[in-house]
Length: 142
Image (cartoon, rainbow, N blue to C red):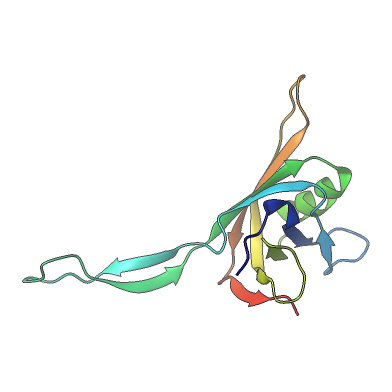
């Protein structure tokens, strides 16, 4: 597979509080970092007497990820709305872009943290932490 550049990444989140609830809102123009996908999986240790090393069995997936970027009213509406919502938000992330055949991570997540900072000498950034509800679906764009 050819190498990709991060500038081609796309990120969308459910617009729960907008004019069209339940539709994915493209946040790509405002997001400059997505970190933590596809996520981690817990392991349960099953080491017994006589074993020469630790043995484990796979457990539950427990995925958290973060997004960050430049603040915009769209971000406040979509991410802030998902942060205040009492339902999960659908997300879709394409680290190589969204053209046919490129990898896509998607699922449902809770926005657990939404932070806006400002300093006199820099852009106004935002960051958000998301906890996946269930598992991340790995696929490709059609």
